[in-house]
Length: 282
Image 1 (tube, rainbow, N blue to C red):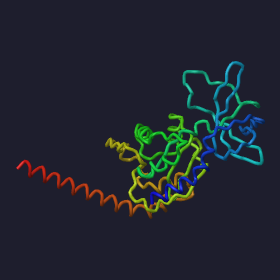
Image 2: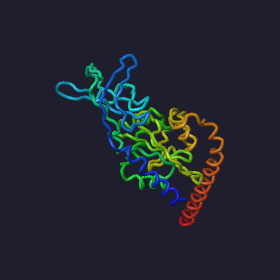
Image 3: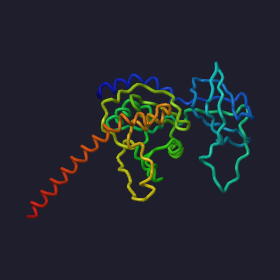
Image 4: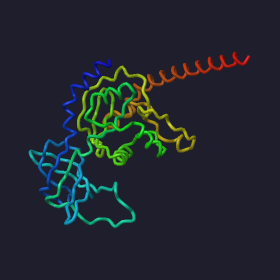
């Protein structure tokens, strides 16, 4: 199983390498009514998000992002999006707008990525075959998730986490697939088949070395925990057309049975340890 997974990942290596090469283009047209810009296509993909560098007399500033929504022939159309990550409540809002001639840069942060995987083995295998990418520790991602009292990594959470850690790509292992997403649009830029049928034990909400935080608060009790069923949750996250409940019907019985077996083993070990302690005391 391990050799098969590694060979598949190595085959896809060259396909993804281009995602780490920054691309620059200059705005050639602006549609103020539709809040879109146009520029020359340079091997870009629909869904990619870049930064618009607004040039002034003395400096260049990043005030907006651009998400590619259409590509035809050699022309790209991108939606203008306000860039609020660095926004300060006590500073005046900039009035500069994108103009023809300003630069748009894509893939600048794509050398850094987060990886969501169901277990340590697959997590390490993917990292091993993607040397061109610096994978930020999944401990950072889970810590950020728990800091907000959440369990399920929602789309908005993932976008915020990518902003905070300056990450450009998100790798997600879903059912029989390794998908690479743009961190801001969560659009799948590339994917490859990956046999996950033999993976039964999963770590949720995803692999990390940090245990889930159980605060005992009402919020913690009521918080959504759909990602306890790993493949159902993440496959639905990147493919909304594949209903969570439908996949859950297949995954839940197997996962619940394995968890029950694991719990029984742990209880048996604890019981044996307790007995040994009592015997020593006597």
